[in-house]
Image (cartoon, rainbow, N blue to C red; front, side, top):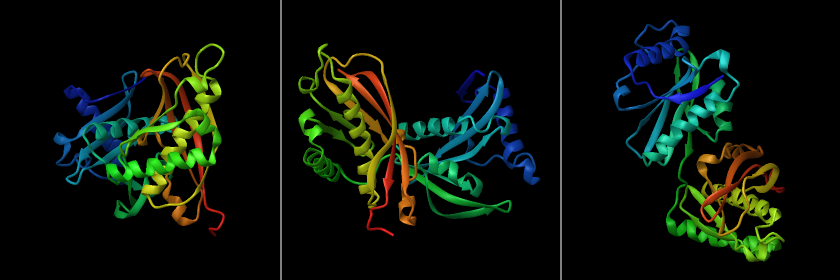
Length: 301
């Protein structure tokens, strides 16, 4: 299977794109051809997933007037479902929204797709209008956390101080938060106190730097959402690509964080998978992916 994501270019591409939309999203409810389109097609961003020359998934993004963007007309060929194609398509559309400077992505999800979008980091805001007798929910996720630079700086200072007081290893490593702009967190630690016998960064220090960077992004999200939880790393993997020889840094972004945290409001533990890149003098040398758990405080019911 050779999967690629592209945009419709030729007349044949557009014909196949809209035909697929109609077959997947309108024909099952006896809606006529043409009902799969609206007045925003020309000002939207269209993506389609192909297996060779076969169209197997589509999705669209358009900007709204409030700094957000909306995903619509998501569809995956039933024969290809369960292969993460929908997740890849959503990530592609989110990247487009981020490139446009949007701070939030919204969508109206069928009730059967609510869990799928929650796993990608979307949370339910309110019921959306029922369509063709199917219940829908308005969902959203932030591409940039609400707040100001001053607020983010204060929270990062508090977080770093908390690390050094409660996790002695972070203080010994001289781990610091380098920057946070509401969407990307960057942490760093000097090479000297973390060096191994080969003159490169100790693998355990790399792992700790990545773990705390992902943990920090989760913590900052909870603060922005005014949620409280006990955070633990449940599972993780790391790929060491090259030695860390200079200027160690770790970075992760909201786009890499997958999982709805607002379920905490409903008395449920939350989880989030976060991808962290480790860089040596600006070049990626390791990739970390952690599954974090946000557990209800012990005093909570």
